[in-house]
Length: 204
Image (cartoon, rainbow, N blue to C red; front, top):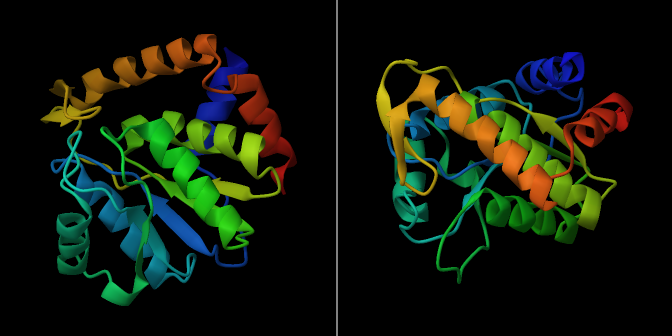
């Protein structure tokens, strides 16, 4: 239990590198949640903690509004168009956390990234970060991955999540996310929490 608490706290309050990361990946959120990651991205750019922000190149699917609409909404939130870069994920029938994680790690490896920031809505941040670290340990273990959660949003607001299939308050979705972490860890699709915590303890 203490190990779980330490991991969660370190993910939600990670210490960013002194040198700006080459990129910050924004997970493909449903429309009610996307402003959370946009706010985080703008702050990262304004504070020069990331050189650019990365998004999925997918068309509208699985609750994601698609790269074109995502980019347009980001620009409306004050993110410079030139700072947005798309990560190749098409063609894919659906879009989910593991597809995004594996794609962004391949993207980072192909470009020789040393540091990558991961941003999702707070209730999804733990699983999102764990999934990217899992992919990196398998494909690009020298990549240093940092957690930067999206901005808080009302916890009692009813929203959609998880390919647009889940609906509930953001507070209710916390339990759903924890269930998925347990399920995917048992299946071997997600590194155990102890391994992710070991990664964080030795990353820097």
